[in-house]
Length: 303
Image (cartoon, rainbow, N blue to C red; front, side, top):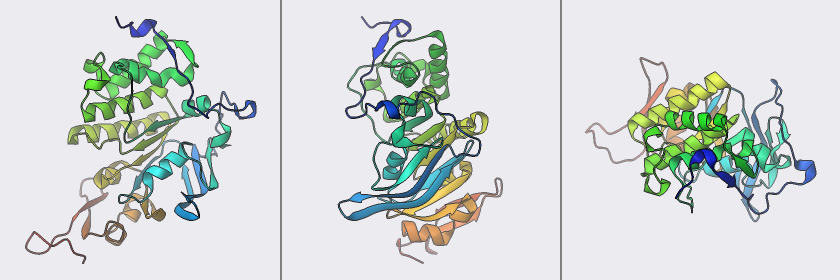
């Protein structure tokens, strides 16, 4: 018989190779208002002597939602993993709240930064509620008993991602979209200052795509969270993001406000397809669509 969530004790071993040295242990990171929540400088990453990715500088400030976009293979997911401390750059450094990410213990890092990957699997038959409650683990330690405040946080996370009615469902029975929302719910339960999300709405319908982006933006506005979202949904980036970073072949092509980045010249050079950029009359933000030939079909060629 499954134990009730309110009485279970979770013992979560650290991943191999992640045990920090005493000098690297940091139980509480204090962030200065003049310091970005997340900062990457001179990042280079590759294999052997070949540099696959190079980004000179990127800062994420409290309350800011940054969109990372580009074609497949541009380096978006790799860059997010480097920012999360899940991979080590060949050159350059990543700072979280002013401290080098590799100097922060895994537990402290998880209290400050939440990571939502494209794909994730679990070997355990947790319920949705139990899986989301794992986001509370960094706030307790390797063995902990769930407290009433943890249950409240988990309940709010379930409601935010629309999974309250599925809280007792086994995660193995979820659809792709429900699973993606559960991953986001786990990140919300971490109550972290920084959110890194890799294609968080890939399997979601139009309604939930908008709802998730509205949720992320509200976290930035109301709680001062800093977020980076890598996605192929340009229309969502244009509507919700404060700043965009356009990447191609491991390099940053353009960075700035949506209106500065989302130009026909920038997008056509990166995605290699004819595109039209117009101003949305209601929001004043860019609106991107395909540009076809006069017959409405087109041949996919360039302008």
